Length: 578
Image (cartoon, rainbow, N blue to C red; front, side, top):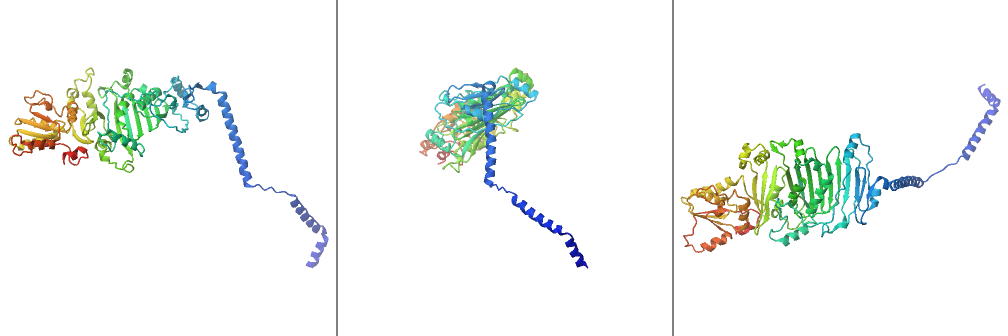
């Protein structure tokens, strides 16, 4: 029954089967009529590249057209006198840059279009017109190699003005080679490397060698109580920087300065030898500066130039703005500095020994490297025939107070002349230190304890010391202590270095002061009638006079050795103890 019904149903709907087959055929025909497109990856990448190139080209073409069409209208061009002369470009208060080629003006200059607040706009307008910054020049006799300059400047709301200036190669030979050092500041002439102080040829040869070594010298300078107007002037600061570089016989390739908001200036200069940079805080009267150079040419001789050029004292109006006085004293500029040797010498210089370099040994580590001294002034630095002599005035807490020292040297019209410090300035003086060959020999604060302990025990131990010999003692302090004994009839002092004694008479007067001795009518102990000074080798002097053992009349009751220690790394020590 079910099979019959099924059969009837099939025969009752023949169109059903027909329709199904028709739809299948139609679907197959439709699928046959569709088309398919396949793209290779290289075609897709090429399309993207061409699109980007076209967009980039349109953008740069528009920029060039805009800059060229408005070049004369928007920018103040100072025409170059020659193809090698610098080109200065300015826009509004923002002096963009100084380039050697006008192409770099069109494509390398960045012009700050950052919108400013009314206060910032007022500050910028207050600075107009901006004076042209000085241009570095080639020092006579120097050859400056060609360099490639790459730069990028970023907009910053804290910068009110920016300037970039490049060296003018067309002025070679116009700058004097002799540095104009401050005559009031003695100049330091250190032996900077593995050479003897009296061998100029050897020293020069070493400098030529070290210029290629991965090493250099770094000066760090902090100055306070400086004129705020000077510290806020790009032009004045840039002029001081270029003057310093010329006096130092270095080469400034370019420099970049920013005037900051609300006040302050930051500058960085690229040297052929390395770099110079500084930042100022005008409201605080402070500038910090660092100078790094490669090679062996000493940097310390220019410390006096830095102080003269950058430690500009405040005007009377600026002093009043500061409050007029500091700790009861008129404001005086003060500078702290540090000199450091950088890089690697022993590893790359055959035969180099840090013990032979005063900058890398006692003097360098104990005085020059340290930035903790409130005062560090070089008194004299010179090479005698036998050794290098360095004398410094230093002041450091807790041994001395810089504020008390300022009071002790106050001027007579400063209304503080009744202070204890002013009445007793000798108690607040800086410590004066003597270095021979980079090795500490004596100091003002340690003079009395050292020399009294050296002399008096042996003098007291002898029942009647009449004839005394001193070997060394170039400062004169040992001679001073010996002359305090009234039994002494003659003191013979033998020192090989006559120039050292001349320096001691001039710069170490406290060491050889005999004016307070009983029945003394001389200022210097070297001029005392009981003193006989010989400038020769002490060993040779004794051999010549005591070769005959029967010479009893010339025998000494006491002999005091006041010379370098046997382990001091100084050439003269070998001659003294052998």
